[in-house]
Image (cartoon, rainbow, N blue to C red):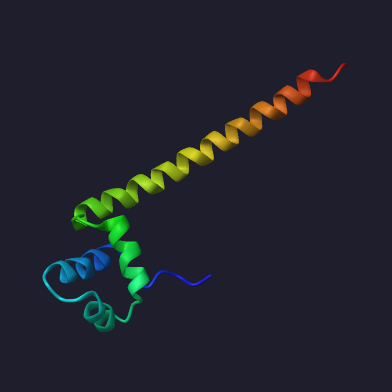
Length: 88
C-alpha cells in the first residue's frame, strides 16, 4: 500500500495558501497534487490550525485503541458464553 505523501501540517499549509488568494489549480500544480485531493483535504482539514490537526491525529489514534479493546472484550465474552453454554 502506498504511504501518505503529505503530513497533516503540510496539508494545512497548502490549504492556507489557497485561502490566501492563489487559485486551486496553481496551488495543486505547485505542490504536485490532484485537485480532488485538495478538495478532500479541504473537507477534512478546512479551517484547522496545525495544533488542531495534531490533536485530531491523537484522538483518532486513541479511538482506534479503544475500538481494539472493545473488540477484544467482546471476543472474550463470546468465548466465555460458549464455554458456559456447553453441558458437562
